Image (tube, rainbow, N blue to C red; front, top):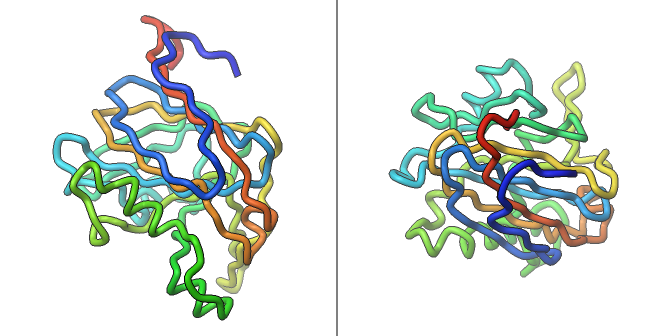
Length: 209
């Protein structure tokens, strides 16, 4: 997990909590699953104009896959690259499951008032003047959602191990927002939410990043 550059930010994000920050063009965001099998919901926006934001459908169509991995670009709804995945130790990151919410948890599991990723996104985005209408279909790092030949899908046990990570290089100045998922009613977190580590660094001139 070596980095080749100046570390600008390094923080452990507790289970079930939000995080957000502007990542400057060329800087690298690393998300680390410290204990394994921990889903991390993720959204990103053009920092100069947040009305331009990550578009799940275009990202899937352009790359031809419902999973993200090394080499995948995260595209905006304007056809621009926001981030590029430059390193990935897992190989499967979900684009279709979306974020949990208090409402969907009630519909699916019959429980009310649960901690959830949509509320976390609202807290993470509030400092940037963004709200509920800005929470769009998101990425779920480290979450595995297999799709069967008949179109069936389910959230199943994640494949990430302790220390697995994904590195994202910002292609423009980007608002990055995440929810360290608090879900305990399906196996996306092995029914036990755990902390993650978030790092930001500026690569050395001429480095691979």
